[in-house]
Image (tube, rainbow over all chains, first blue to last red; front, side, top):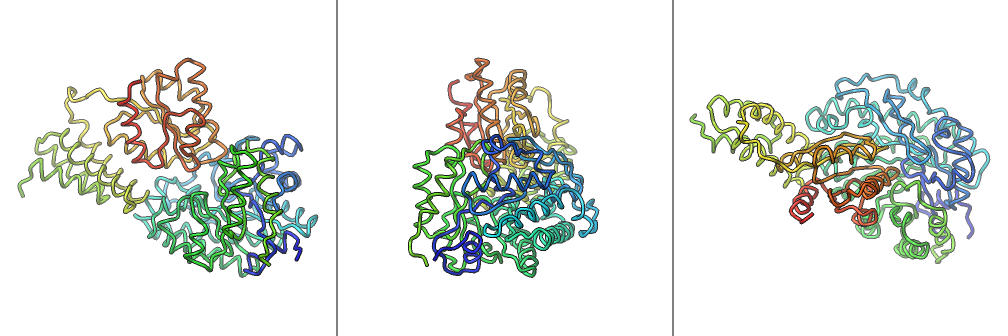
Length: 345
Length: 218
C-alpha cells in the first residue's frame, strides 16, 4: 500500500490502517519556520504574517526543506487575540509575535463583539487565503490550519493574572468570555475549511495545561471549550488535532474525554503508556524539540525510531521549535519515519 | 472574643490558605488595632499561610489560580501591616533580580516565583516582561543582587537567556551573580548548556534553588 501524505494522515485520523505513521508539524504554536530556511529562500517573517502569498510560499518552503508531510499555517498564535482587540508586537525573523498588552483588565470588562464580523478583520483572511493557495497547488499533501485554543486566546485578551483568578472567583464571567472566544475560533475554523480548503484543523492551548489549571478547572474550562470546538469542526467535516502542553499526569481522565481525532503532547509524556491506558486515543508526538535543536542527527534518528517502535500514531515535534534549529536535524527525523514500513498495513 | 497574637496569626495564616483576601485584611487591621507585633503577624500569619499554600501547590492540591488568590490575600495583609513595622526591623535581605527575557511577555511563571521569593524573605526586584539582556545585568549591579532569575515560556526566546550569561562573562561579572532559569520549554540540560547556575521546574523549587545557591560560597 502506497499512500499519499494526505490520504495517510486522514486514514490515521479515521483510525484506519496505514503503511507507516505520518510525520507532521502543525504550524501555529508548533511551526517549523526556522531561520535557516527563511534565509535560504528569502520568504521571511515577520513579513509573511501579513501577506497571504508570502505565507503560502513560506509554508511550502518549510515543507520542502524539512520533509514534513503537511503544510502548516499560520506562523504565530496572535491572529485570534488581535481580532479581539489585543495589541500585538509582530516579532522578528527569529522571534514569534507576542501580545504587547491585553485590552481588558478583567473578564467583566470584555466587550462581546459579533463573531462573524470579528473573523472578517485582522489577519484572518491572510491565513485563509494562504491556506487556499497551498491547497490549490498541492492535492496530495494536507494543509493543517492551526488555531490558538480558547483559554490561551482568552488569556491573551484579559490580563492573564486576573483571568486565572477569575476562573475561580467569577466563573460566570469567565464562561461568558470563553463562550464567545470559542464562537470566534469556530467561525475562523469554518472559513479555513470552507474558503481555505484546509484538510485538518489543529489547536494548541498552552495556557490551559493540567499543571496550570488542575483537574477540576481543566475539566470545567479546557475540556468543555475544546470539545465545543471539536464538535463544531466535526460538523464542518474536518478532522481535529488537539495539542496539550506540559505534564498531563493529573488530567489523564480528562484527556481521554477530549473529542479530537488525535491528541498531541509534550516530550515528558509517555504516549505509549497513555495509549495503553486509553486505547481509543490516537496519539501524536512527541520528539523533544530540545533534542531536535541540540542532539546529533544519529541521536534524533534513534529517538524517532523509538516513537515508531512504540506505535505512536503520528510522529511530530513535541513542542514549538526553536528558530535556530537546523534542517539536517529535522530531516533526520522525517527521513527516519519515511524509511519505516513495518507491516502496520 | 479575646484575640491574642497566637490566635490572630493562626487565623491570618488560615485566611491566606483559604484565599480570603477580605478576611485577611480585617485580621491584619485587628492586629494593628490591638497593638500586637506586626512583624510576628507577618511571619507567623501571612508568610506561614503562603508557605502552606506553596506546599499545597507542590503536592498538586492547589494550582495556579489558587496560588494567585492566596498571594492576593497575603499582599492585602502586608499592605495593612507593613506601615506599622518599626524601621529597626528592616533586616538586610538578599536581593534577586527577576524578569521575563526579551521577546516574551508571558509572565505568570515569573510572577509566581516572585510571590514565593517574597514570602521566603528575599527582596525581589521585578523588571517585568520583555526585558533586554543588558537591563538584567545593569540592574543586578546597581542593586547589588546575588541572583538573576530569568523566565520564558516561548521556545523562540530561550536563546535570550544565553545572552544574559554571555554578557556577564564578557563583563567579567559571571562570578558575582548566580543565574537561574525556568519556564515551560526550559530544562536542566538547557541550563547546563548555556552555563546557568541552576534550573527549577516549579516556583517552590525555584525558592529552594535560590536558598541553596545563596548559601554556597560565591
